[in-house]
Length: 141
Image (cartoon, rainbow, N blue to C red; front, top):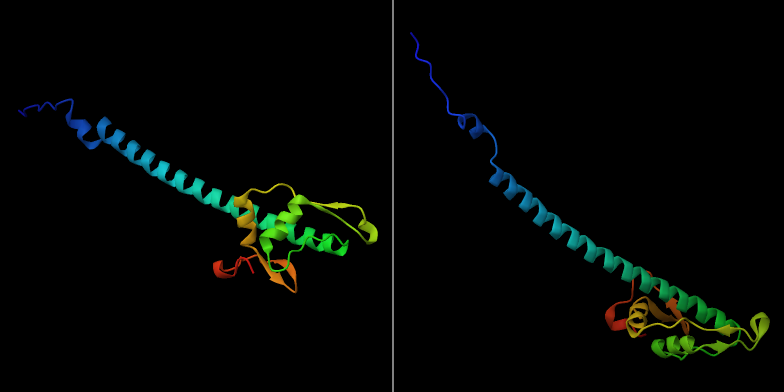
């Protein structure tokens, strides 16, 4: 006769994962997720700040052109920061259809001004928008 071998109830569990092993896997996945989410958040913030700076530079360029066409003296030759400060202070048009209209830029922080200046350069005496940005050594000119 064959001897009946009795298996231990734990013998079949050896082929599966233990609770501790599953907890370790979940912890590793959680840690990796935290790193990825942190990186994505930082990247997203950088993109938002770049877009903000580009939008401000575009607004400065268009407002400067409109103010100049209306005779509002906002341009400080070769001084981008002072030109921006003149726009923040605001000027009234003196000629044409926009005579008496106020040309002014919303308040910008020093960080926003510096950010916008990275996308502005002088071209033919006017601030000009440069989508890819101006090299750091050329930022104020």
